[in-house]
Image (cartoon, rainbow, N blue to C red; front, side, top):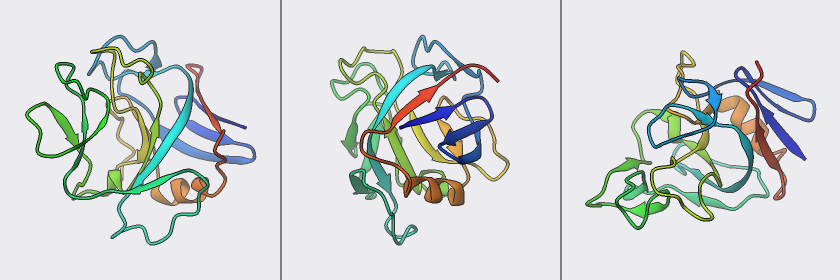
Length: 166
């Protein structure tokens, strides 16, 4: 089963939802912070979610509740680059427990994980879009209701295909 993502939509079987991608579009990701959503085929490693905001998630994929001391390392100098970490950390990281709702649900894609290449990019997620569907820093974002509906359709072996055509 494939999820297809382009500049405007996430499609899975008969399900289609509006989405946004990185500010510089979909392409070959060159480095950390380049604002590009990486083209390619990926697996969903696991789902991170805010238990205090999302009461029930229907999904066959492994789920991990986000706690206040969780972050994602985006610092190429760290041995934990592109990994889930416990805070505080002496290295740069993305805080996962946020006041705004964009990280209420996060699907972690296996981009740059085996092996991890320093500075190739980190934290490529499918997460909740901002209200105005503002472009991301490289992730894929869709509305919370679309994301919740979509989670129930996923299988453990679902492949995420990110393509650059419009």
